[in-house]
Structure formats: structure tokens, C-alpha cells
Amino acid sequence: MSKKPDYKPGEFQWSFLLPKYWGIWVGIIFLMILAILPWSIQHRIARVLGSIAFKSLKSRKQTTIRNLELCFPEWSEAEVLEKSEQVFIDQMLGIFETLNAWYCPKWFEGRVEIEGLEHIQNAQAQGKGALLLGTHSTLLDAGGYVCAQYFDPDVVYRPQNNPLLDMLIYRCRSTIYTNQIDHDDMRGLIRHLKNGRAIWYSPDQDFGLKQGVMAPFFGVPAATVTAHRRLLKMTKAEAIPLYFYRDGNISNPKYKVLIEPPVENLPSDDELDDATRTNLIIERQLRIAPTQYMWFHRRFKTRPNGSERLY
Image 1: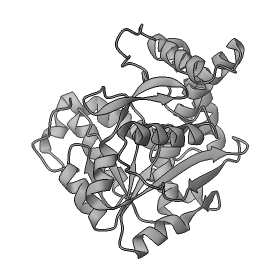
Image 2: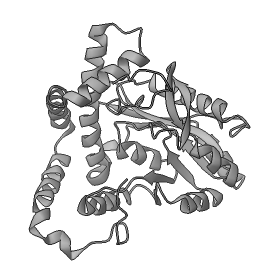
Image 3: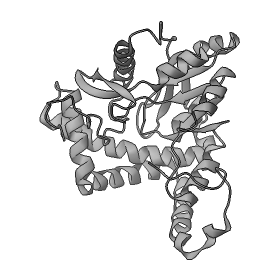
Image 4: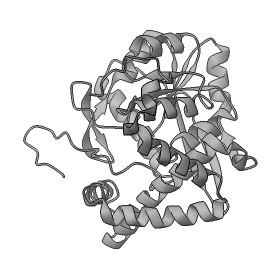
């Protein structure tokens, strides 16, 4: 668990000027330079860096391959390998897209389309919050930025362990999100939902069974968080699936935001059924652009009693 900072999020500390942080400052300046490069150069660099990362980060590579083998058994061995490398390339593309969102947002002009915005608008018109069920996309904050062109989103985030990085990322994200809610701040999350806010929330990672139940994900039993059920029950907010992805030719990409109708009867009286339906929503989203998801996380780390490990 990350240590709670003893300062306000986004607050500058004079200690950030100490020599131990100089390397990070140099890295930030380098990233800002990359952000002003033309997309034609950015996506070429991303391809090279993604391929290098795929070959170098052997543990992440094997996790990605294993996840895709489990979730897409219809793919051949060659397809799994090709798609696995593309995951790393898409992650690098997502970093450049996030830098563009932070520092050169005009690049997205004329490149964004949205479908289903009325579902969020209808919920808020009724005085309800909208818990936007999404995924850990490789688009990172670029996805949040394209959403912010149409509605006012908040985000749940996990603070960085490095305080300087946490400050810098928090400040950059403040240009996109009205509110950034610490993942441990349940009171804040509840308050914002009760106030009718639209909050991007991703219940798609394995945090064990203290916070969830085993439910099928692409047909494989997976630890699935259920905190969103409690949030929805306490706030009377609507559960609205949200997905954003890159589409079209990589040299001239478009960005699409897909918002689906509110999920009926969520939460129900059946915790397992709710978790299963949530996973089905995420599956449906991921099949649109399978490699634009962070498959290098061990989604199936927790196993049912008596089952062999998958990694």
C-alpha cells in the first residue's frame, strides 16, 4: 500500500529541489520536449520504444502473453505474440497521447467523436451521479481529456509513491479533471456522487477477495472488486459503462468515446451476479480494441482454492 503523503495533493515542496530529485526534473523536461514533436515522429518513437520494452521487460511480457492466451483462446500462437507486442506499443503511444493532452491539447481538435452522451446528461438532469464503469486503458489521461471535451469528469486515482511525480501528475491532471479523488477517500467519492458528479471508475483489477468475489472474466475465474456496488447503493448514482479508444490509421488517428445506457438493477441482491455483469461489460469494451488495455497486470493472480497458479 502506498504511504499517505503529509502534504496536500499538487502542493509544491521546497525539498523537490534537492539533488535526489534532479534526475526526475531532467526526465520531465525531456518528456515536455517529446510532447511538442509532430505526431509523425511521436508514433514512430513509440513503436520503437514499445518493441524494446516488449523484449526487455520479460516478466511483463510473459504476463501479457498469458493473459491474452487465457482471454482469447481463438487466437493462434502467432496472433497472441503479435498482439502482445502491440500492447506495449499501444502503451507507449498512450504515453505520447497523454503528454499531448497535458501540454499540446490542440492536437486532438477534430479527432474526437462521442456516442451516448445523453445517458450521462439524463442521469445528471435527474440529480443523480454517474459512476462511469471503464478500464485501465493504455490511453491513460488522453482518454480523460477527450471525454472532457463533452462533459465534466472526475477521476479516482492512486497517489504516486514518489512525491515529486505525484505533484507533477496531479497538476497536469487538474487541467483535465475537476476533481481527483484518492482511491482511499470513500467519503469524498460518495460526496461527489451524491452531488451529481460523473466519476470515471475502473473495477477491472485483481485486489484479492477481501474487496471482491470470484467471477468469470473472459470465462476465467477472477477476483472482481465489488466496491462499486456499495457506492451505487449509498449514493443512488447510475452505473454507466464508458469506453474510449483510438481508431483508424495510426498516422492520422481518431478517438472515440462510447457511453452505454445505465446498467439496470445494479446493484442487485446478488453480489456474484453483479460482479459477473460488470466483467461482461468490461469484456465487451475490450473486444473493441483488445491491445489498448494494460494486459501486463496479473489479472488472474488470485486463484480459487485448489486451483493451480496461472503465472
